[in-house]
Length: 309
Ligand code: FAQ
Image 1: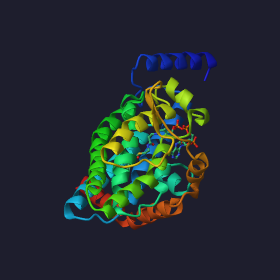
Image 2 (image 1 turned 90 degrees about the horizontal axis):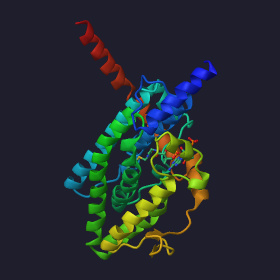
Image 3 (image 1 turned 90 degrees about the vertical axis):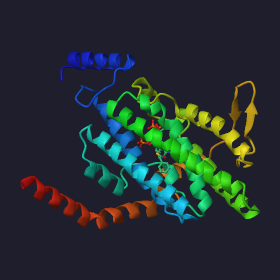
Image 4 (image 1 turned 30 degrees about the vertical axis):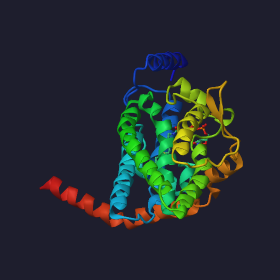
């Protein structure tokens, strides 16, 4: 394309963004904006789907099982909305999923940690969904229309997920010494990985600056991480849990909690495929795709039969 035309289109595009006018699938957009969205939305979709796997832990009662099943089904739904949003950018769902299975694309680091006890399911709901909402509420105002609309639905459900997790953990904290110890142990293991969900520190985040200019992201990784810490510490105190960070302290002059250093080596190891469960998670997704092949074939054959009749 002629550079003058390209410059004009880019200028008009940025003006739309600056006026908070949503970008829709058929609108002109820079190729790098399209690619950034495909990366972020598909990573988000994969996270929802892979994120269902750690929750396959035994629920202790029928009520708990029913609630957990509803939550996990929501996650499948979130993945589907997000794969649909990715498809509006001109990529196929099949290719996107194949890329995940081939280890070419990322999903959230948090889902590569094991769940050892029932309390871990509470910690996931409270901390992981809590972190997810903190990151996702601003995405309801992201500049790309289909992503923003998907996020509105998703956030409504995520707040139920966070509450179910907090309820599990709160109830355990009202229980026996063993139950309290189980809750504390789960929080000890999930606290730091939850802080890592927000991504690298701003100094090391290669995409943030451009994504904020395009209003894909509305806050930096560190801003959201701080908001999460500030919101979560009082919730932990209320139910008598200790967060595993000796440096955690209210800083009057900043009006925020200070917290200790994140182990970024661990983060990059997990992101790079070397976390405790990376291999197991991808193998489970590959197996699920293979096992479900006959269902997809049958559904397609059925749809085809009804089209011709
Ligand atoms: N894990 O330059 P930045 C959920 C990668 S949904 C793995 O800062 P960006 C629901 C990043 O892709 C949770 N990789 O990148 C649920 C980039 O790699 P690349 C998922 C990470 O995009 C709950 C590189 O590092 N949520 O939990 C991570 O500006 C319970 C440099 O990073 C979303 O996906 C990480 N944590 O900011 C389900 C929300 N962080 O591609 C079940 C949408 C960074 O250049 C149970 N995504 N990387 O090679 C976002 O908001 C952003 O993409 C960030 C990262 C904030 C995650």
